[in-house]
Image 1 (tube, rainbow, N blue to C red):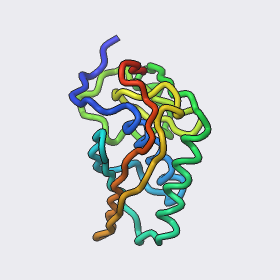
Image 2 (image 1 turned 30 degrees about the horizontal axis):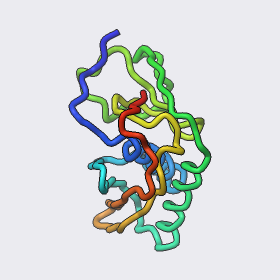
Image 3 (image 1 turned 135 degrees about the horizontal axis):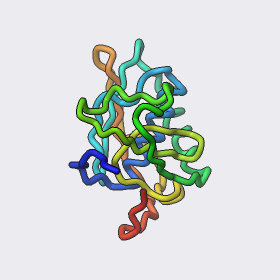
Image 4 (image 1 turned 90 degrees about the horizontal axis):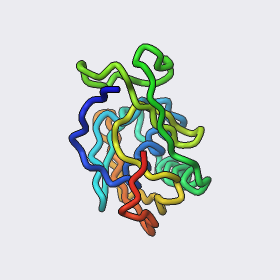
Length: 160
């Protein structure tokens, strides 16, 4: 099986939190997964395109909903599937043109599924607490900056 090379070294808890944030944004606002993201150990950011600026209450709800998912202790797993068998519900628009014919689908319990070659935790109980640091909304783009607190992830146990 041949997969595309991966040129990033994500921090697994933060990268898995990004998956949960993406699905939360889809469910709350009907938008697509983050258009641009910068995922780092200390803090990260994701951009979403929305028709209107979220209220302070909606931003607080995003944080709350992400933490509710994390608290469910969901298993994070992966499956390999031929590209032509990927369900239409999975957004493949960000995949490179030369993507391999086998894709890796990453599941966060039954909450999220997406094509991804990054590293993830084994269970959401390794993520800690998701905290939104701040947001800004400009010309339809919502940028969310966030961090993780009290992260129990064990560095030498990289999964999936």
